[in-house]
Amino acid sequence: MKASRITAVGLVVAAVLWILSGYIIPHETAESRAALRATETEQKPFRVATIDTDVTPHSRTLLLSGRTEADRKVTVYARTGGILTELRVRRGSRVEKGEVLAVLSDEAREAQVAQAQALADQRKTELEAKRRLLQTNAVPRLEVTNLEAQVKAAEAALATAVAERDRGVVTAPWAGLVTDVPAEIGTSAFSMAGKEIAQVVALDPMLAVVEVSERRVGGIKTGDSSKVRLVTGQTVEGRIRFVSKTASQTTRTYRVEVEIRNPDGEIPDGITAEIAIPLAPVPATRVPRSALTIAADGRLGVRLVGVDSKVEFAPISVVEDQQGHMWVGGVPAGARVIVQGQDFVREGLVVEAVPAAAAQAASR
Image 1 (tube, rainbow, N blue to C red):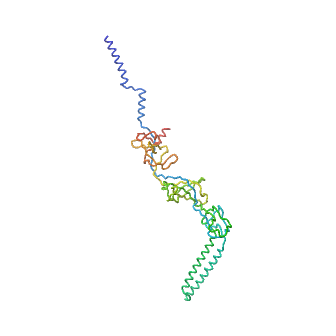
Image 2: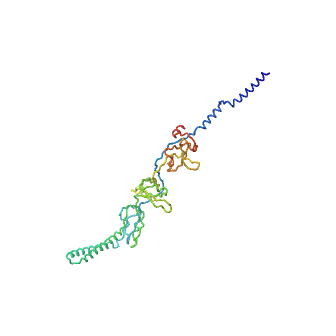
Image 3: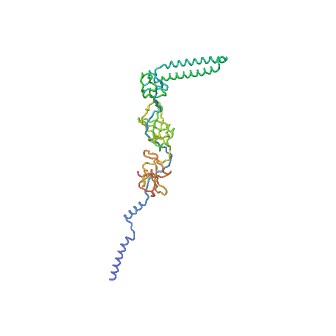
């Protein structure tokens, strides 16, 4: 009886120890191994792809819409009276400097020149005779002096008569294209003084004019080259020749002129043009557009892998936006910019950084 009790107690104790062993002594099972692997995975640093960057001087290009403008425009007026007897040009005529545009009636201008010429010759002859007499003391010195003054007055009258005669012939001030001829042959006598004869436009060189904001005008320099794309599709090279130092009172912008060679006159006046103006180079870093992200406080920037493989945020300023890439300022030289996975990490997190090229190869 005693032996059976001892056996029963032993069995109970053994059962209790067996049950407790499952809680006290660990046993490796499939579930436990999976849990361990999950724990190890959670502890492994997040992998991100990075690129090495460098800060270099970058020349920006400012694209603005403007227009072409003739370098010189003038309205030619008649400067004397008479009847318009000849009109030698019409709209679209090309003229050279000094070419005759119109001729006014003589109105005795040629006769006035002849009269002034005769008087001047008479006074010169008298002066020569008086000087010969002065050598023999036959005439006083004062008479010779008075005659010299009369000669100068006669020469001045002759020059005035010649100038008045030349005003009857209207000429082009420079080479260009006649865009309008408001005058007509036979206009009433003595009504031509101050009347328009023709409008002449110089097409070579041609100007491309654009208005630049006060924030950008500081980076534009005269003498720099520029590209001008016309609305017709033609692209030409130009040179910045003028940057205004006075802002427009209405728009607060500054006038910039780009000089374009136009020897054939193919570029018309007043058409729309897109002008690419180079700006002064600034330090910038080239990064992919996809690398840009927004911080929690709303700032635009990029995430970097810094010291001890910790994530850092660098706010940036956009220098130039290009297709696929951007030039930005604010990225330290030699920084490792995160280009893949930057939206899944936060500042201060330890990550595993791999080059972007290696990450792309592994994904393939």
